Every structure is written in structure tokens, then in C-alpha cells.
Length: 347
Image (tube, rainbow, N blue to C red; front, side, top):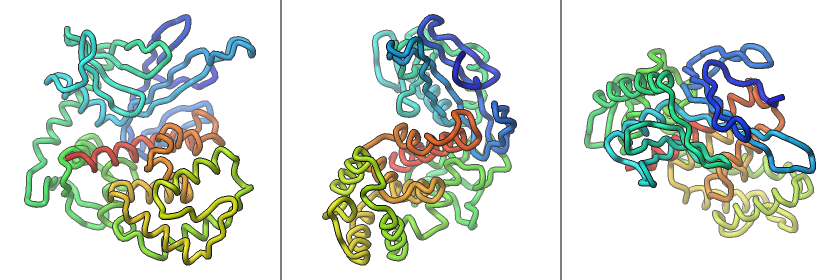
């Protein structure tokens, strides 16, 4: 039996004997979806949810099926298709591809046929059916409408269709980020910061001093939280990950086996390192730390590329059932946190 409650509405077979790819369109914004655990209300903007299955390769355990998931924001898919149609993408034999998230791309062959390109064992593309394409086309129309409302200003780019939760105007040096917010407004007219997405992440950046200031009391709180754990509370693998993270960011490690620093000194060293991070990464840190109770070093490990977002979400969902509200919500949030960093850094 397939070890997952498959998403409804769309099912597509990549290779019936070895691999399969399933997909569902998630509108977002309070949408209620069915899971094996009962109805689940989404509190994020819309995504395409993909589930891939393939043999896990361990023949000693008999025939086993492994799964992978991708939660791809609707904006990323629509933007990718639009760019492919004007010839912007990575050239491969027979067409173009454009990454939408890590491990997942949208492609278009030289005949103009679009396909999904998940990172699976076979590496085969999956044609996008006419019905699925109609959803993406509708989103592309909404994206074009959103783009028409984004204006260039002395501050970069601005969108007047909505303000932040604290009443600040939407403006940023990244046109893509502002377009993503305008797109979310088109898809969810009642857009609120509580429906997590690019707009909500932008509110964290614009409405709070924490990401820009990285204040001393935050550093002290982070250190105190980490000091609540001893070196023996984590595995050797995690310890090595945390030490490498510290080596990449800090002037010297502040926590680990054999390290004994006073908390005030550790907080000072941490503050120096944190303030070297680009502002978009500080926003991502605040989101992961606050939304996922991710602590100090695990979010930093992602932002310093010691691990990727897929590995991060594995750490943060390993205690949840694979289609529970908690697991699906966490994966969707991480997709938008990752996308926010890419968009905010784009020029």
C-alpha cells in the first residue's frame, strides 16, 4: 500500500513500474483540505503540492516505497511559465527549464509543451496536462494583472493595493518580491498576515525592528535557550553540523563539547556574527526561530548552506504524521520562507 494519503484532484503516473508523481492544487487562504486525520484548514497562501514515490533501493527489506514532497508556491510556478515562454531559462537538450524551488523545475520543450521536472531517480519530465495548465494560465493572468500595478519609485518598486499589518507601504528594491505580494493580493483579496506567504514575511521585515536590529536582548535570549541544552543532548551528527555552522558565522564557537564561555560573552560574539547576515537572511532566521521553535543553530545551518531547506524541513517534521495538518503546514511555511529569501535578494 502506498504509505501516504494521496492529495485529491490530480493524479499523474510518471512510471507505473518504478515511480509515480501525484499533484494537488492548493488555493490557500483558509482552504479546508481532507487528510487521513480529518479536515485541515490551511493558513498559508496557495501552493502546488506534489508527492513523488519511488522504490527506496534497500532490497534487503523487500519492496519498499519511499516518498518525497514538494510544496511549490503558485507565484513561483506562474512566474516560471511566463519566463519560459519568452525564452528565459536554462538551455537543455530539446528545450528550457527553470527552477521553481530546490529539486523541482518547470520545463518547456522546443515545441512549446510544458512539463514538470521533479528531481527524481529517473530524471524524467512529466507533461503538464491541459487541466493543470489551465490553472497555471489563470495564475499567469493574475500575475500579469499584479505586475501592471507595481510601479518604479525612487525607493525601488511599490505596490499600493495593500499595506502591511502595521500600516506601512509596500516598497522594496526587488521588483520580484513586490510582484509576489501583488500576486497574493490578486489570488486572495482578503490577504492577511495570518495567511503566511511573501506578504506575511514582508510584514515581519517591515513592521518589526528585530530582523534589522538583531537587538542585544534577542541575542541574550537565543544564547540562554541554547545553554539549556548540553552537548550530550544532540547526536554526534547534529553536533558537527552546529560546530560547522558556528565556524562559518562566528569569530569563535560559543557552544559545544568542551566550550565554556560566559553567556554575556557568547551573546556578544553571536551579535557580531548575526549582524553580518544580509537582511533577507535575518528575516528568514526570525521566521524559522519564531514559527517553528527552531532554536539558534538549525536555522543558521540553512542560511549558511550547511544544509538545505529540504533537510531543514525533515528535521522539523520528523515527529509528525506525513499528511497531518502540522506537517503540511510546516512544509508550506518553509516553501515560502525559502522563496522570500530568493525574491528579497533578487535585483
